[in-house]
Image (cartoon, rainbow, N blue to C red; front, side, top):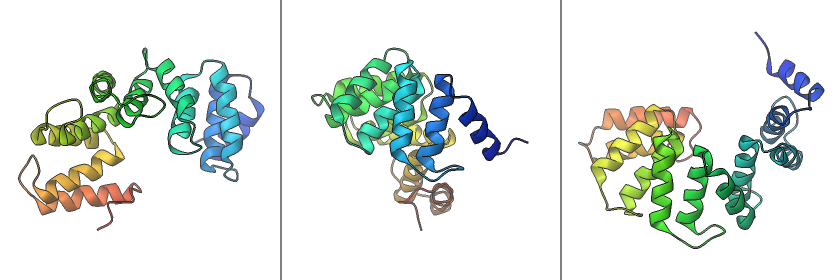
Length: 198
């Protein structure tokens, strides 16, 4: 079995393509086999993104949204990716929902989340659940929200897992079931979700 250290050494010696650069950036960003260094990670993502690596572009967009804030670049990268890449569609939907680098447009956000969800993006499925809960670009529908959170959780989405626990706990869109709430909250907490500690 190949170890993380072996992969890291291989990546260091094979920085000749965008996939290797992107993965090496991931190692730096998360401190895998090396001291965490987000600046080097961003530089590696940028190099990979220049070669049109979609994952690197998506990672940069996320960094510009959640980390080193640059909303205009986040929107630009997300828009570039949204044509045929589910992660890009989801990011662009988030930009429209929150007004990141662009004007608020709830209907456009909902539409983009729907497209990304149809392509199997579990973050978008969870975001659609939120839209149905809050009435963002659609009518409030608690049963639909429950179905979407359940689908996102079953696909492994961390927020969907926590949200499903919340819905079971409160009986929103389904009957309250403390056993199910505890199960989903524990699962979410075990995966590192900060809001799901019992």
